[in-house]
Image (tube, rainbow, N blue to C red; front, side, top):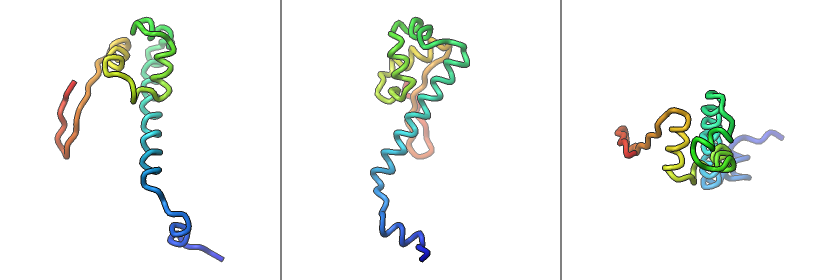
Length: 101
């Protein structure tokens, strides 16, 4: 017996909250991976970056493991500066972007 997509959807409805939570976790992992890639492109170890930031290596590890979402802006700013960059924060409303930090 072949079941249609509608049949499957009725049998196992999608929970939008679970989907949104999964998307947010995926985005957090992607952001963490991007930070790690920036560090490795600079040929820095976590310990070397931590020294530049004046934090422990475990803090860099936490940031690069998805903890950037709960990291203070100042810590992310120091992460960016330790790599020779800057941190920008913007708010987007509709098609308009506002730089706030």
